[in-house]
Image (cartoon, rainbow over the protein chains, first blue to last red):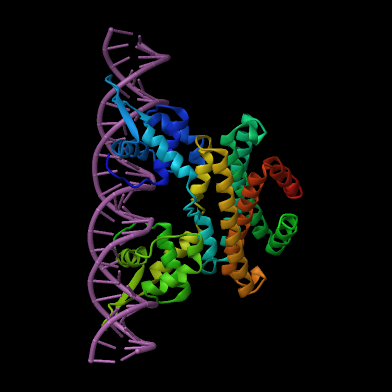
Length: 192
Length: 192
DNA sequence: GTCCGGACCGTCCGACGAGGACGATTGCGG
DNA sequence: CCGCAATCGTCCTCGTCGGACGGTCCGGAC
């Protein structure tokens, strides 16, 4: 019941249990795997250690099953729900972070050869096309209207970002970054 | 001279020293602060510990200044240059990661109120507009043609992504995600 | 039924990252 | 010559990472 620092990961656990009801770490692992895990990755071991921490903090309760597999089911407490709601309502401390090794390689491209950049771009184009196909597939499976399902809203952000990066790498491969800028300013003119 | 695992951070250090020449950790801190630091953040302490690791691995050499402030200047070795070039040329292990607490909050928005979402969106719009202004300013300062300066290419990616997220939050605030989809498919039609 | 292989599930550990606290150094203004 | 703020470096604690490893369960072969 001591004070602990709650990290974004903590809130993923709290949020998942809040949405799904009582869950075992393995349940969480699967649920995370095909949802929030796409844009906020972390190792599965944390889904075992983090609930423990949260239980100590009084935000979850733990029930151990007697049977063979020592399985623990966690439920959210009212304190946990409150903590989650407070966090959601709080102004964003938002430390937006986009970490892409490919972006780093591009940044240091002076050290390499033009060929390297071309290959990098090609790889990235393929990767992001794949991702887009995956996400679009998910949208279709769950109904095309994003308003239908609040959890799909986040997916729209993912798709939008994937398209942006794809456009960038394509422009880079085509040697036409100026065209990218042009399309950008033209496209956002009706918004600004 | 032992084998160490090289993380992306390691390559940031190697790359920076390779671009700038011999540097002290503090030099790196400043250089990183207004370049690669924008899209790949890490605490300054690592700019002191990481070069040490790399020196042990034989990728850097270290020269300690005798004077008052115990200042260390690191230079890259040929092994270091080689490691860097190999990494740049290697196919991307790319684990693209976009971590945005705001995105998490959005994902769990069912737990909160519609008001929360509206406030979140408003905050994010402001944040990303700020970022865009900052980046556009950098572009203007360094010359508008991205091809001018290879290090500005990466900046273009940052800008493109910022615009994408901005479009998303604006659409969300306007309750018009469908419009976002429409514009997207229309815009990429000429590419696919 | 028992044995075996593969899928399922949980824990551990060693290395690394995060980031704030704190201490030392410098040089500038008084 | 002193004090104070800016500059610079180190440390410490906790969290994260991710892979290795070890149990548990279930279905099929015999």
